[in-house]
Image (cartoon, rainbow, N blue to C red; front, side, top):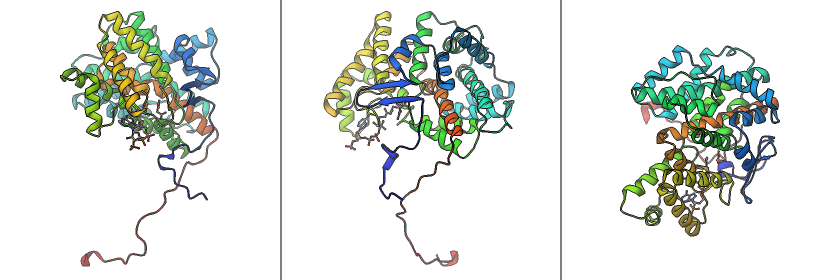
Length: 378
Ligand SMILES: CC(=O)SCCNC(=O)CCNC(=O)[C@H](O)C(C)(C)COP(=O)(O)OP(=O)(O)OC[C@H]1O[C@@H](n2cnc3c(N)ncnc32)[C@H](O)[C@@H]1OP(=O)(O)O
Ligand SMILES: O=C([O-])CC(=O)C(=O)O
């Protein structure tokens, strides 16, 4: 048994996967053999889900029936809506609310008592979870703002329908396409922390809802998916200060702060998703006649790269992209979950198909052979 300790499991191989490939030195990301650049440009979120879950790209008919089946599962039942209303009234954090809602979805799932590892059942459960998360999130955001939830529409794409339910207004093509592209970019990323959490949970033969609930909780942290909203809060702090962005981050680094949206466990260079999103952020700024958020971001990127040798990750430019799309800042991480759920499900399916309990070891550094003192003598 190896005694080498790999803190944070850095570089440790724990599974085989056919889902996504990351070359951290070249800045390359591939889903099932297709480059993220091609998928972001050409494929819809529904196509990418089909690719990840079924192993190949769908033809027209397959995509149509897959998308229709997903769209028909968008509605959430009354009990779940009541709990969303209570969470919104309590002003719950959106990621905590989403975690609670995902867990509660199992109560109304028709296959809740099925064999937890059955692939066909899990594809249907996964379709239902993926279809309902946007409805739940949009309802939560509207209810806490004092607005009525907007019922989902089956005639819109996954991306367009979410924006429609959020804003009670059908998005224009630019908004819908930008959001769809963001969903494609966030769908999968190897054994990142939240995906790993999902597979650890699945490896005990717990069910899909349990695995996805674990994953939502894990994504919420500021070192992982939570970073995207921290990036936007930082950009707003920069804007509110009298400092230019470079001086602001220089001071933040001197204070020992980590700059959200920079650094990555796998990439040594700019994350390929950040490359695509930085172009999008600039494009949205130009279209609106104000590139301020992009310019702040680009100045910070240049400074951190030259001073710390750290490159931006996906969370850095998704922030200004979402902000310019009018999406509320504390919704950015739930939106990450709304997309990543497709990757979590794909990895959980792989785990069930070739399962072994995931159970590493810790090196014990505590005391030994202590003499027990009865409570009355302590
Ligand atoms: C979707 C995603 O999850 S992408 C990641 C999102 N998270 C963030 O953007 C949060 C900011 N980034 C970070 O905290 C880290 O880069 C992580 C968590 C992403 C990667 O962490 P690790 O691989 O464990 O690297 P680790 O935390 O050991 O950092 C290595 C060194 O770089 C420094 N560093 C890493 N990221 C940053 C940062 N964003 N700002 C300042 N310094 C940083 C660390 O301080 C450390 O320096 P030290 O060795 O002098 O102490
Ligand atoms: O891979 C990681 O560690 C984090 C990440 O970029 C992601 O989950 O998209």
